[in-house]
Length: 224
Image 1 (cartoon, rainbow, N blue to C red):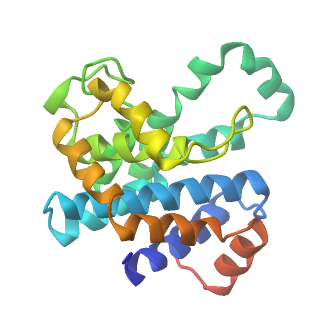
Image 2 (cartoon, one colour):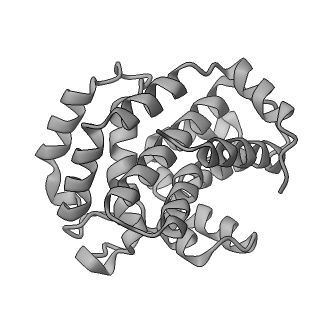
């Protein structure tokens, strides 16, 4: 099953993010944390399935937890009026978040491999991603793992414009776009999907509400 180490990571990083922006846990912040926790769990399990070392599995889990930190940074910069204006150019706005996240984590002296994974987690294996249009094995390995896990987590999560997809439909949609993924990583991911561990991880996260995030992170006495 998902380890207690992962639970501790989620509490520690969630509390740290809360303090970075000095804000209460609202519904949007809680959703961002839930997504990070899910990507973190899946990345850890996929890395283990790929026979990576425990240290590498933990790096993948850490990268999964903070992979969208640049989006929180953007929200801190942009007030509501400007957000309304920027919807006109939403794609360009969104595509800055890997670079912002990378810069923030490097400044805080995160492991360079974790930072590289954050910078390149939207690169596609066929070279159609961003920010660098990297191709194949030029993309850092942890970033290739995050790419698969991030897409899956997004598909099985509810969005303002659609309901969450069930797991089988999410896999079908990913297969349609499989050119975006490292096939070795994707096959390992599929093996994980069939395991009870993934079902446990998803079910556990779905039990959290925004109030429970607030309680858990304040109770834990997290450290920077």
